Amino acid sequence: MNSKKPILWNHNFIQCCISYFFMSFAFYMLMPTMPVYLVEELKIDASFVGMALSSYTLGLLCVRPFSGYIVDAFNRKRLYLFAFFMFSLMFLGYLYATTITAIMIVRFIQGGFMGLTSVAGNTITIDVIPSRRRGEGMGFYGLTLNLSMSLAPVLAVALYEGAGFHPLIITAIFTAFIGLITVLFIDYPVREKVKRPPFSLDRFILIKAIPSALSYILTAIPYGMIVSFVVLYGKEIGVSHPGYFFILMAAGVGISRIISGKLIDRGKIHVVSVWSILGLAFSFCLFSLLHTSLIFFLSSLLIGIGFGVSVPAFQYIFVNVAPAHLRGTATSTYLTSFDIGVGSGTLLAGYIATHYNLATAYFSGGILCFISLIVYLFLSKPAYEKNKLFT
Image 1 (cartoon, one colour):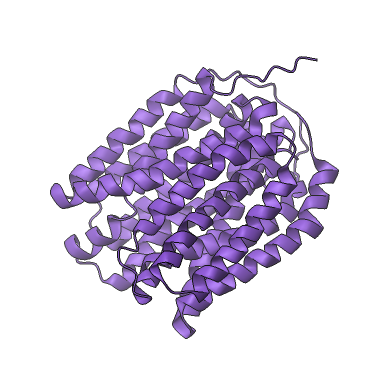
Image 2: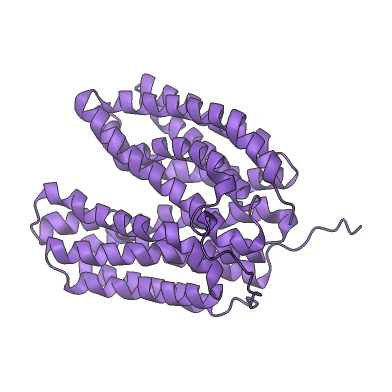
């Protein structure tokens, strides 16, 4: 038996990481600037801004449940190129959309193509990663997303303040098309078609991963609370420069993913998952109960480490219970679970903050992580052990 480790950083994996980085970078340039543009330049009432931003998520959720079937049914690279091209092209819409309705339509369509692009890209990446280094590979692949989330807003704010919204959009278009070009250089073989029943639920949802999906949704809800309201929470408790929370969280994610992927590949998937969920539970409780700048920023690092470990661990679980011809469905189920959790977290945090406060919302997030751990131990873990594959 050959014990030599297969090469992870091959040509295909590098191209996958680069394309994902530029796609995410282009999108996250809009996150901090779009609300300001809508209110300050288009004079749209602040109460409608949330509708405009959420239309993207709505488009994404409308496509995600079906994208796994589409990715499994058609040529994955061609589909990736088409979806990536349409996602990039939709940035042009922001140059001409000047009403709330037009912007919502542009974001809805772009969200749909983003859902298809991300599933296709994730699935192709999983296919090109050697199975013995899958956990490590998915960790590094996910790290490209965290880098783009950290760097894109910095450039976007500087561009917006210095040149305006339209030059920012042109930069985003250019960035997205660089990512599209890198997809052309991925050497991806044509797969043999696998016969499947005329209708089966696993075309849209990976049935074997439903227990893990439930645990993942419960873990993702606090993440939705964080990305939506943490800056406001920091201002409430008197923290200076609360936006630095995201930089420290990204640092925690980066540190943890370098280590956690190797542990997963050594068969420590349950150890990694349990400790990451438990760490998140305690971090959110600490974050909500002690209101000092030190705890605020320490928690950001700890929360980043927790999500940096748990996200690739869950993706590994979803993928490793799916045969190769269902990897698109597995990826779609995994991403849809995350989207449901994040969306629910945003709504739940807003509701709790309205009736109580954000500290209560984050404490409830910690409780949900404890519940997620129980679901993992009694449902997800047994289901994974029963259905896991090794190829």
